[in-house]
Image (tube, rainbow, N blue to C red; front, side, top):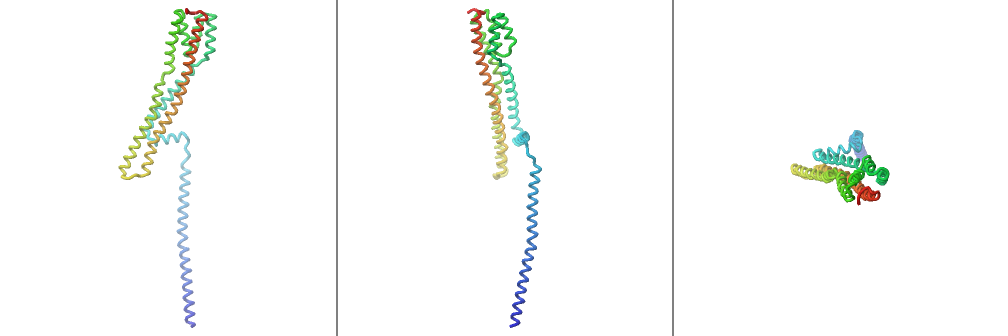
Amino acid sequence: MKKIISSLAIAAFLTFGLTTNTVAQDSTTATPMENVAEQAQAGASEEVKAEEAEAPELDFIQTLKQKYIEGDPLWMTPVLICLIIGIALSIERIVYLNLSTVNTAKFIEEVEGALKSGGVEAAKEVCRNTRGPIASIFYQGLDRSEEGIEMVEKSVVSYGGVQMGLLEKGLSWLSLFIALAPMLGFLGTVIGMIQAFDKIIQDGQVSPTTVAGGIKVALLTTVFGLIAAIFLQIFYNYIVSKIDGLVNEMEDASISLVDMMLKHKVTKA
């Protein structure tokens, strides 16, 4: 009986000892693995933080430059040229039209006062000293005052057409660049899509990275072309509205000139 009890005690001791050693070994082996995992995770987070710290935030100009390069300068450059030339034409027209705008009511009063005080020559001198198409039309009408009212009207109408042509100078080129910019953008997009499909054929499989990258580069030219056309269209509409206003003032002023000349009897009816 004593042998049995002692045998059971020894077996229990051995079993408890083995279990304790196994748990201890597991704990000692698991701890380094956990440390390695934690170190790897910490290293990855540090790398991400380092990349975020190394990549500075881009401002608007730098972002445009980056997108310009990503969109392939071969196709982005023609669109940029259209935008630059279109803006240059727009600025030139806006400056010209603003210089051509005068206070029409004040100018008509000055011409009428000159007609009363000094006759046709004094009125012509006022026209010479005033800029703009209205003053030029008045000068041409006053210069034909001795040939009768019909000749004055024909001269005013004819020279009004000449002045209108000068006001609209360059608008045809501006409208061309408005239409050309998005067309060049679409052309770059189509060619970029063809190149993307060619790359898919070469790889022999449809890779999301290849497709997405090619489509992104292709669409950048379209976006850039549309933005250029939008800017130029705004300038174009402003210029057209400015010209329409000047043409209306020219027509009203021409009628006032004829009435003024008949009123002061500086021409034959």
